Image 1 (cartoon, rainbow, N blue to C red):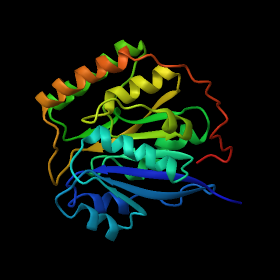
Image 2: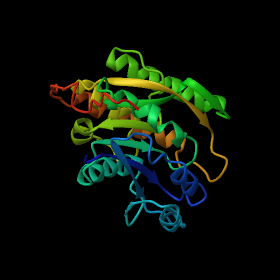
Image 3: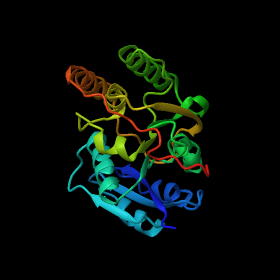
Image 4: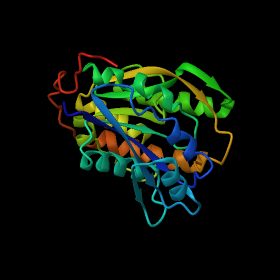
Length: 248
């Protein structure tokens, strides 16, 4: 029987110290009906991110000539996953903060056919090492999304997200700098079914985050406004599209 395909894609900018460990921990054989491949989107790294990714066993690497931003990298990851014939995609940050071992958990609702878009939710699971100002920022932006969508969500900034093929094909990210808020607003407004799965999260111990709070706020708020002004068409989502009764 021909297996379906899962693409695990990782946006990465100067993550030579972390990305090898993330790639090595990706489960490759957790479901009998799916093969798993790893795709790295190198966002103009100046270090050895690409070499480290190759050495760790990445199946595909796409490199930008210069740093475009996390939103642009995630957009490219979704596009390339579709071009690589993925039936399901999952994005995970390359900074070693999110648990690759829980990829099966995050994808289970999509494989079962009950969701099209999933989060690995830190605030429904366990968090180690997150500072108070980051918690408050996460709470604030998540609350804003919940108000705009008129439904409760727990972790609107998660860096671990699963997608059905249909969700990947139709997702729109209107901003190159970041993706977290606008992607969820876009997909849920289109009618895609969202589910959050508890995960364990550990703040990075190597490297540094390139997201600065002031730049984040001044870039993301206009992007949210732009997304909410855009008309979207409701999709006729087929619950059986990815269903696999064998389970995970």
